[in-house]
Amino acid sequence: MKTIKRKVLVVVFMLGTVVNYASNKEDFSQPMDTKKVKVVFKNVKKGHTLTIIDEQGNILHSENATKKGKLTKIFDLSSLKDGKYSIELHKDFRIIVKPFKVKYNLIIFQEKLERVLFKPVIRAKEDLIFISKNNLDNELVKIILYYNDNPIYTETVTHETHLNRVYKLDCNEKGNYKAVVISNKKSYVKEFTL
Image (cartoon, rainbow, N blue to C red; front, side):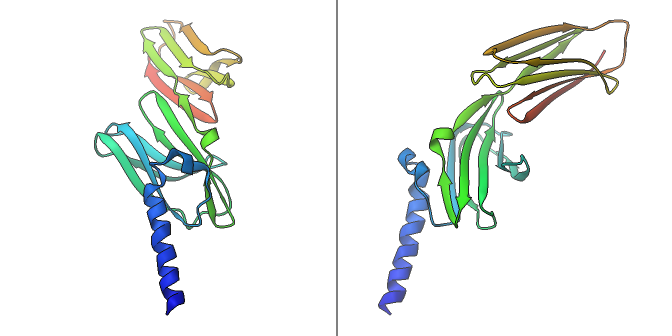
């Protein structure tokens, strides 16, 4: 009977650790022998997207915030195999990335690898395309412009912390255009018609 009580006490203690987990920043680097994790994000707007992604970029879970304020989620990660993952909150102009790994049934958040990715801003006005992006990590940025699904321009940008580009289109070439910006293993697309 004492053994059963100890096991129950350990489980209760572990659940208490999970509940307090996201509020204690120091705990993010500590392995947890549990598969339920509480994640808290502040200043969330309705429509922001929360995802869990594996290291190949596959989206394993995605949901939209339904209200403004603090977003608190408890995830059951028991189905995840050993590997690297991230929980991401996609906001208006940035993505908050919280990486973690699963190893031998332990969940290890990697606080030192947490980062904020800035999304590009892509605008089209008449025959001009404006693309800007904060690129503080100096990641490789690839820009591809399409006309009627055919690539018409490609540029690869390296070592620019603040990317600003303006492209002028031929106003006589009416049709469907698309601007694609690829950065941090993510693609951002803006479609428009001239």
